[in-house]
Image (cartoon, rainbow, N blue to C red; front, side, top):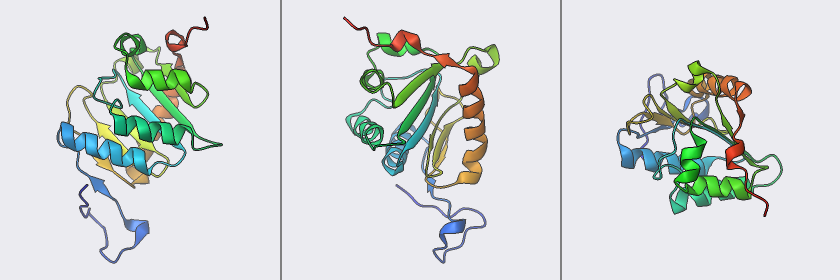
Length: 177
C-alpha cells in the first residue's frame, strides 16, 4: 500500500500529524486498502454498505481478518448497516454466513427511513481511525486513510445516527431446526 504525504504533514515521523493515505482509485486498490484497514483494526469495525456485492468483504483474506477481529475477545464488535440484507442472504454472501455464526459480535441492521435508504455512499471505519469512503457505492473509487480521525469523524457520526434509527435485520437470523 502506498504512503503519500498530505497537506500539513511533517516528514519527521511525528505520529500526531500523520495521515496514512491509502489508494482507492479503482477496484483492486480499494480491495487492497480494505484489506489493510481490516488487518489494522483491533476490536471494532463499522461498515455501511447499501448492497453487498460478492467481491466486497467476501474474499478469503477479508473473511480471515473479520473472523480474527470477531474472535479478538472482550469488546470485539462489528456493526454493519445494509439497505438490502435479504439480497445478500439470497446471494449466499460469505459475510452473512459469518455473521450468522457470530451474531453477538457481528450485528447487522437495516435503515428504515427514506432519507437513510436513499444514501448512496459506502464506507468502512476502524477503531484505529482508518476509513475507506466511496461516494457512490456502485462505483469502485473513493478515498481512504489508515489513520485520520478528523476525516473519519463525520462518517462515524453519520453511522451512529443511522444505526440508532435502524432495526435489526431479522431476515438474517439463522433458523433453529
